[in-house]
Amino acid sequence: MSKVKCSRGIEARVMPSMCDENSLMSIPAILDLFQDVAGIHAGSVGIGALDLEEMGLFWIVSKIRLRIIRRPFVDEMLDAVTWIQPADRATCERDWSISKDGETLAYVRSVWAALRRDNGRPAHMADFYPDSDFTIAPPDNEPFTRMSRKFEGAEPLGDYKIRSVDIDRGGHMNNVNYVRAMLGCFTCAELAEMDIHELDTQFLQQCYEGETIRFVKRSADSALMEIGALNEEGQVCFTAAIK
Image 1 (cartoon, helix red, strand yellow):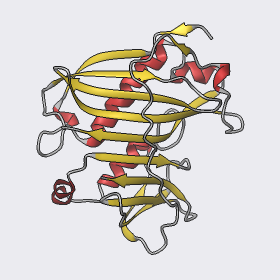
Image 2: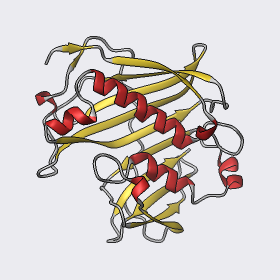
Image 3: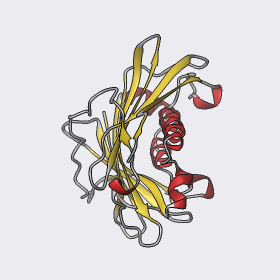
């Protein structure tokens, strides 16, 4: 494949609609901005959602780790930058950060795959993924949190019925909406006490409009808690380690 510019940056203002009750940028809004900038860059190098649609493919994200140093305030101006790492056979990594005046406020590491629309199987990255002309930063070598998919006996948090507003172009529940629904299981006071600075998520199965997922939580040695979302068949479709 031809060489492409591996990065893209934009300026972004923290709008009131992106903030919580304390006028701080919410965690789902941070992840939404990541997706927006990623989509802008992907489209500029020929691997956006519409480009993949023409190839009979669609993007899915399998893992996202968000680290927060400081959540931005309403009306702050941010620099948001995303960049891609070299891909392996079936997955690629995209990283992202937001900063202000050179100070990093939040960082995302994510792993993606492209599935074929006709059979749901992963596409070979070499068939469409571009080579990068340079790398802003090397891959984060710290492994993602290993979480067991066994949630028997875990404490129930709440059920969530997937609605039309949760669905993205791939036809399934958008990854940020798992996080949004999960955080909605807690009160504002509980979230303030948790003071989340890291969220390590894994997306294991696709869920669709009309399905109901059940959130449960358990204690963890290396996190405040681990949360699982179970589909109607009792299979774990989403996990999160909250730190």
